Image 1: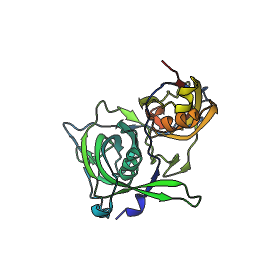
Image 2: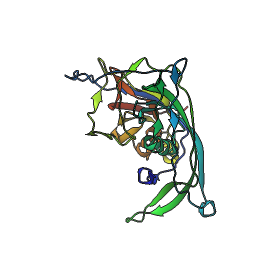
Image 3: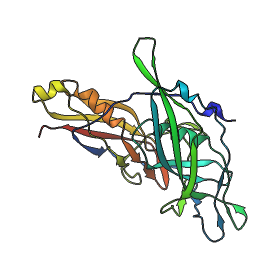
Image 4: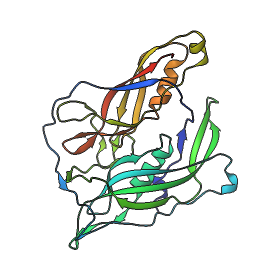
Length: 283
């Protein structure tokens, strides 16, 4: 039982509609002095057996108690190491909702019978589809503000698949989108440049105009700073160039729904700081 790994998530549900956005890499950082160890990554095929997902037993909540459902499929890329632990979790097909975060937490808690090459445990690249059925419950915090609690209402269905274009080598990393490595505490935040590649947006929803800004025919560019963590989730989203008429908050809401292929340094996914332009333009 690994129930303590799967925590309820506080989520803010919002919709986004109109603007164009551009991701701007930050300035480069100096190279790290020590290079982490690289490992060979195998693909399932002749002589290489696939890992086997071990049962993950979670207590579902009663479906009768759920008034607002949130369902969806998230597909993740991962490396299953020689001990059966999931490493280098990134998105292949995210949803752009907090189901993505829940899928990451579930897969981070998964354990596997490791894949083998000629009978010896090895690192194997895999894709994992996670079918989630969740319940959104409205609550209030101490300040009386509305919050939404996301919880599983049934066991997640998980299916291992072949990983498209697995890397030949990689540096193994762990983490669940929290900005921390689960084995060594807080991680160093990199900057794009040199050996650190820029994160690539997979989902970049547009931000919605406010009615007040539309009536005033007000437009402009809001600059948002965020950390893209090693899983490809935006963290610490904040405004660095403001706009009026409530557009700042709409820009933050949109960027929080971005999903990325994470930055990579020498084969290792790493968190980086970037700036995003959120362009509010009337057409």
